[in-house]
Each structure stands twice: as C-alpha cells, then as structure tokens.
Length: 427
Ligand SMILES: NC(=O)c1ccc[n+]([C@@H]2O[C@H](COP(=O)([O-])OP(=O)(O)OC[C@H]3O[C@@H](n4cnc5c(N)ncnc54)[C@H](O)[C@@H]3O)[C@@H](O)[C@H]2O)c1
Image 1: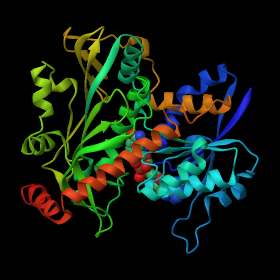
Image 2: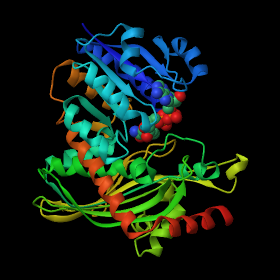
Image 3: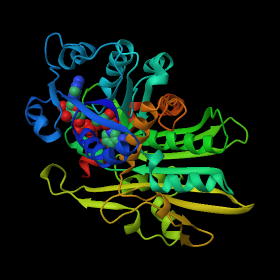
C-alpha cells in the first residue's frame, strides 16, 4: 500500500466539501493500492483550528495571517509537519483566491516533488500566469465540471457520432447580492463574476473543444459586456456583477462559444440580457418545454439585510451540433441541488438522455480528487489531464482577455452608478 500525504489549506466551504469528498474515495483508492492520508489542515481562523483535529483526525495548524511577519507556508510545512524538499505530498488549496499564488510558489519552489491542487481562480491577474509556465507540470486546478455527470455524457457522445458546432453557457447565481448588502464581507468570491462564475464554463469549453481535437484552442474575444459592477471589499476596487462574452476559437474547425455569468440571480440577469438584445435563458428553456423547477434553483432568504432578495441559481449549457450528420441541440443542466439533478436533454428526440453509466454516489469533487491523487501516485502526466496546466492557462487567459475588452468598452463609473440604483434603491 502506497501512502500519499495530503495537506489541506483552508477549511471553509470548499475545504469542508473536499474533506467529505476525500472520505468518499478513500475506499476505492485503497483498493488501487493508494492510501490517501490527510496529514494536516492549515487554517487562519483560530476558533476553527481548535476543533479541526477532532473533526478531521489530522494535525491542525494555525496560520497567523495577522502577525507582523507571517511565517511563510514553506517554513510552516517544514516546522510543523517535518516535510523536506524530497518529500512527495499533495496540497489542496481552498483558501481565498488572493492567497493562491503565494501558496503555489511556496509549495512548488521549495518542494519540487510535491503537487499543488488549487481552487479556482488560481490567478486573479495576468502576472500570476508566469508561475504556471514555471511550475505548470505540478499545478492542478479544480474546475469540478470536468467530472460532472452531464459533462461526462457529452464527452462520451463526442467520442461517438456527436460533433459540437456552437456552445452557449449560463452560470448565474445571487451570491454577489449578499456582498452588495455588506461590501466588506468576503464570501469566497474574488475577481468578480467572470473569474468566480464564468471561468468554470470557459474551462469547460476548452475541455469540450480539446475532446474534438480543436487544439490548441486559442481565442479571439468577439464581444465582451460587463453589464454592471458592484463594490468589493476594497472600496476602490469595483468587481463585475454580471457579464456576457463571445469567444471565437481560432483553431480549425472554428467554434463559437458564448458565456453569460452573474452573481445577481437569474431573473435580474435575464432582464439585463434582454436590454442588450441577448436571449432570456428562462424563455429559451420554456420554449423547449423545460420546467423551471428542473433547472432553476430558488431559495427565499429570511435574513433582514436582504429580505427582498430571492437567491436564484442556474448552470445551463446549450450545445448545438450534428449527430451522424443531422442537426442536433442538447440542453445540458450542470446544477445539482436538492430536487435538481444534472441532465442532458436532446431537443430533436425530445427526451432526457440516460446518464446512469456516469452516475455514482461520489460527488464530482470526489472524482476530481480521485483523478488528481490517482495520477500523482502513479506518476502519470498531470499537465494533460482536465485539471492540468493547459486548461488552467486557457481558462484564466480567456478571462483576462474578456475583462480587458469589457473594461475598454464600458467605463466603470456609469455602470456602477446604474447598478447601485437598480439594486439598492429599488431593493
Ligand atoms: N470549485 C468551486 O465550485 C468553488 C466554489 C466555491 C468557492 N471556490 C473557491 O474556493 C476557494 C475558497 O472558497 P470558500 O468558499 O471555501 O471560502 P471560505 O471563506 O468559506 O473559506 C476559506 C477558508 O480559508 C481560511 N484561510 C484564509 N487565509 C488562509 C491562509 N493563509 N491559510 C490557511 N487558511 C486560510 C479562512 O479562515 C477560511 O476558513 C476560493 O478560491 C473560491 O473561489 C470554488
């Protein structure tokens, strides 16, 4: 049995989800001869640290980020866990995105045999991408969707007779509205809706194109609209709240991909879309007979600060293509919430396709972790996996291109003013 040490950084929402997912895959990894051992969990919240050992069975390490001179992560790994330069271990980074580049460098530079698996976005500015060039073979990012049941089905169809011609994605939720009610509250969101929401679909488009031998899929940004901005924790910094972008792949055959992303909810985003002449997602799906309760997740909020706001979320892709030469359209639901399951709806056949070969009790995040651990433990190349540096680079690069283009077209101030009026004054 080969023991693989794992270190978690951050035990917030994603850290906890990853811990539960690791528990799900322990058994099957052991059957493969790999013992995934959670060695330690690093946390910056002192209260949380005090209960971590009991909750996880791993060593809990407090990261004092408020110290006058915080101890660098590479030193903590050595001092607290006795790790040395020739040790092999996997780091899963679920800290806020602003910590990622520093953590990545601390791990990859000082521990040349370790691998870094980071949450998205790994980079919030172009400058960070240089680190991907330097350490890319040991950097992975968890975009989760590569292991979603619906995506596994589309990938399998592509290996058969299905060929994609056009991709349209919607990833819409309301979490930014909470941020608007309290701009100084961090909620795991950095870099705006584009980097928080859009990046998943941009990565997914790259994965689907690669599966169709459209490589390397470099892009040109045909359209980029940031529909509104909202204040972020740093009062001088305004993050995008919603956006629309169209990318054209430059490879042959060329493929067009459109992205809609928001953290202002489905309804509000649909209104904005109509304003710029883009289709309403709800209308598009209603026309295909798809009931809202099969793809749109709603949760009424009770807390005072945003009592009037209903939380809404959707993750939908409309995929146009041909199947054995015949025009075909798929509606792909990527969302999994209580009562809502991923599905692939074939609009010509008017039926939901069978996803059962891809369904298991494991979460997509559990499958992502299993893939990373399996490849690392078996010395398999990581850069060409769906989590590897090729997709990480493309997804971040496309986001930065879209952001630059949108900022050129739409000055911050006017959009921000409009958004404030719309959401704060009118509630
Ligand atoms: N893949 C996805 O679908 C998905 C979904 C949500 C969030 N995310 C990403 O996951 C990351 C974490 O988001 P979250 O929602 O879990 O945030 P969170 O705020 O719930 O958790 C972050 C945790 O990290 C801790 N922390 C902060 N600085 C630290 C440091 N230097 N060392 C150790 N711990 C530190 C905080 O105390 C907190 O407990 C973000 O990058 C976010 O974009 C990904």
